Length: 216
Image (cartoon, rainbow, N blue to C red):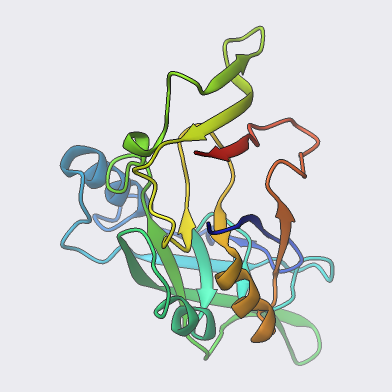
């Protein structure tokens, strides 16, 4: 049986959409989400994706994974090549323009585009690659807080779960899970900007559903 880990993207390489981004663009990220919700599939257009690395020594590294609003992950070409050899949910790789702040004449700062390609590794676990049929809801335990929000869970999978999957997400969790074989490959290739934890090991300051996963 495949062992899975939680993958976390570090914020030492982080950014946001530029202030000048055209949110009304017909290929804006919101249009991508709207199309998927309506059609349960990827759109025929390529979304316009841009990212500016923060001008802060604590967050301005150029890693293989960049933390920010690009969904699901903003990744380097190196990571794209690695992922192409693994079993993934239905997905697309969309180009992302990544810019970093650079000093000009030692005084003024300009945003310079990184020459190395970056991509959005995009998949959808709600409308396209829904895994509800893999969960034994009769035995799955969900605890809700006072606001009715899922707080802690114990998720049981049934025999429909495909153990050849190397990456997946489920509705009852905020986490992204990767197989041990994919984790080991990332480590072997010295992929930067990520870390791993055991399932149900790590929680955030603001508690998010990080369930214990149980396979039958």
